[in-house]
Image 1 (cartoon, rainbow, N blue to C red):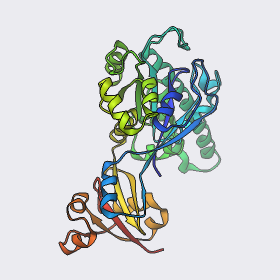
Image 2 (image 1 turned 180 degrees about the vertical axis):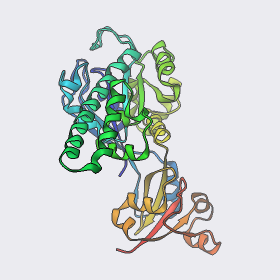
Image 3 (image 1 turned 90 degrees about the vertical axis):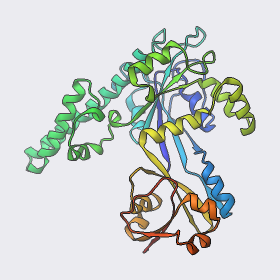
Length: 362
């Protein structure tokens, strides 16, 4: 199971073009609003130099990187949460993702239509996020009704659910996202099943157009002031789509010529890992080397669960090898001879780039 992100924004801001740049999905991307009328999905392997180095040393029969899955939905307009434009059914596609990539147009071009006539990046962000708030408010209000009815019909334990949803409603009516509310852990657990949009982490992709590939224009600066520089990624989406069509060796030369250091895929993945605080671990079993994602602080049994629920349920122990040791000594036997293979229990906290072999009872 890899990283899943949803690509959202106003119509005609470059969402489908970004999807194509990241995943080669081949989604239609044209200069008119609502070119996308249903979700487009694309998947790309996460670039991983260390996985390649391990593969060269261990020579497995199969090598599988972890992935990023991108879901591009139709553009949102004011009133989308009530069915305007193409309706709020598209918002449902975002509820299952780990993170939202909010694409914001940061360039002027009279030849590219804009749904509000002229781009205003900070205002445009507010328009979309208002629709997220309103969509979540509708769900939270239904939650209050559902659990209040349960209390009235003889389930007094549902009072905790009522209180949690009432707090969500109160916050959303004040314009406060679910993720920013001061909630107790139990309240967050109660609300989690609703997969609120405003509870999800978000990154903002400032689409700078072709004239500003380094993101030095006023629109990007305004977004960074309003949202925080660490949350804003400056990407010339059209240029990145062109780069993505080149062979890897030519991509680097093209990037260097534009003064860029990394592709949009590299930039987005690195930002997603930081925002979600993810690490990578590896497994080698049955001549198959594979990379996996895990939230930082995750344990060995949680890592086993990322691979298969049966492995977590039957977890016995794990053997841990460090990436650095494997790169130095080349073989598992060499590490074993030097006492560098460590046996750990279910509560072991997995480190970034650990290589695990998990033993479990089927």
